[in-house]
Length: 311
Image (cartoon, rainbow, N blue to C red):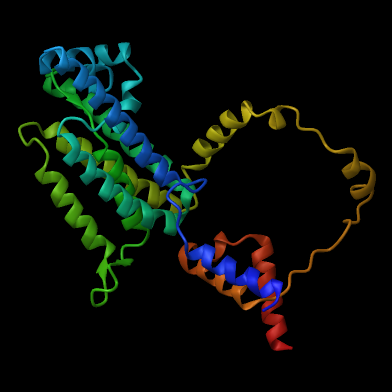
């Protein structure tokens, strides 16, 4: 077996392998953030209980800085809670966290395969934001400002609704007969989520529904060519690169100006060799994201491959 064949075999195996801590794994980042917030609040709760403090004291001293208040005047004093509430699962303990992470991983993994890794976090944030804003706005109608919202349910419902809207016929658990359609799994999750809601307050139910609505709207706009994740990912990249020295002091190397960009003619022409593995990879991408998701290089590669077969 030659070096090129061994490399192709390794590349094929690496493509099938999955690393929980791999770079640019947005789904794992969300799980990690939820786990960190949960452990932090749990640690603070243990400390309070160790000094014989009541649950009310713990909630008034700690939880109120993470949960989203329904009173707009209180929210103005703690605006960061519009973000922190969607990462803080504390009201039902470990069981609620594990349940939410299970459903987020299930639908998030599918969404990542369908739409790409860069869509997961923006959809999660959109779901939490719309869920939280609606929760605060609805308090003006009830005049009841004693409630607060906490938990990732609205955000997870947004991820589930986006994946289901983009590919409702996508099947999971395919080893069981022909598998289960994604829309059926979404209905099961909605039923489980509704059962766990405090039904004495309709605002909790509506806030969860608004989270799902944001996911549906994101998918509809994405189908029409409006990608709501672009600005958020661009802002994140700009902020991260702002503290990177190579980004701040980026200059054009003298070699590029002197040797490579000396005229209108490109320095070389890159001709890609046609391989079956490369063709299968591009066809898989078309099947998952559509032909428009291909780059110009991939489109040219397919055109060259069809010409080679004709010859």
